[in-house]
Amino acid sequence: MKLLLIIFTTLIVLPLSAQINPDSTKVRGKKLVFSDGSSFETPLSHLKILGYLPNNGKTPFYILEGRDCSVCDAPDEIFIHNPEDGELHLEIVSNRFPFPGIEYSRRDSNMVIYEGRAFLGMVLLNKTNAMIWYQKVKMPDGKMYDNILIAEIINGKLRSTIQSPETAKISETLKLLDLGKCREIEGKPYLTER
Image (cartoon, rainbow, N blue to C red; front, top):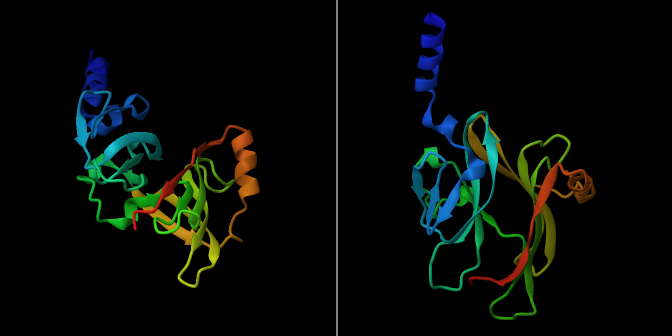
C-alpha cells in the first residue's frame, strides 16, 4: 500500500507541461489546443503547427506558421515559441524567422530578395533537434549572400545563430533527410511585405 501511495503522489505532482503531447496539439483559429484540453492564444492569423523542438521533457517549443494580421497580404513567417514563456510577442524578433521559399520584391515581382530551404529534426550530425535554414539574402549592395541560420533549444532557451556557409553543407542535411532523420518545411513563393 505504501508503494502505491508513492506512485500516486508522483503522478499528482507532475507538471502540467509533462502531460501535454505535442503531437496531438490542435489549432482552432488563433489558438493552440493541447491534449489536456488547455489552450494557448496566439496573435497569429492563418496559424499552423509545423512541428516542435523538444525541451528536455518540458513543454516543447512549437514551430508555428502564421502572420500578424488577418486581412493584409503580409507573407507567412515562422515563429518558435514555448507557451510556458507566456504571450507570443510579435515585436520580439528573436523568435521570428523567414518562411522558406522564394520572396519577391513587391515593387519588382521579378526581383528575388530571399531564397531559403528549411529543415527540422536531426539537421546536422551534431544538431540532433534543431531547425536549419540554408538561405540567400539580398543585401543593400544588391548582391545575394549565402548564410545558414540555425535555431535550437539550449538549457531551455531558444538560441538562433547566423553562420557562414562553410559551417555546414546542405548535402549533409539532405543525406539525413534521405535517412528520415529530419524533414523539410515545404517552401513557397511570396511577395515581400515592403
